[in-house]
Image (cartoon, rainbow, N blue to C red):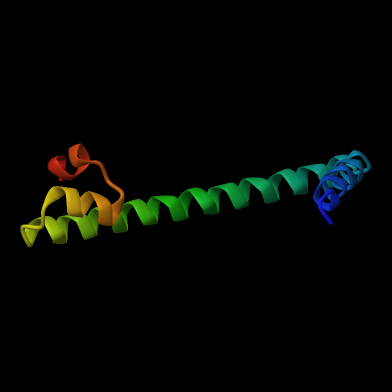
Length: 80
């Protein structure tokens, strides 16, 4: 159902309105943990891309190929 997601959002907001102060703190702490995890995973991916770029650069791969493969810019690759 197309509008189902919209109803779910409204329902979730209504549920949040009924949370106690303690439940709201727990909810916010859960969001913080989730965001921190996502951020940490993004940092890991960035490091993996840089490691891959360094390996390709050491193998004398063309910078445009390294850029396409890793998603890094030419400037980022040059600075490695």
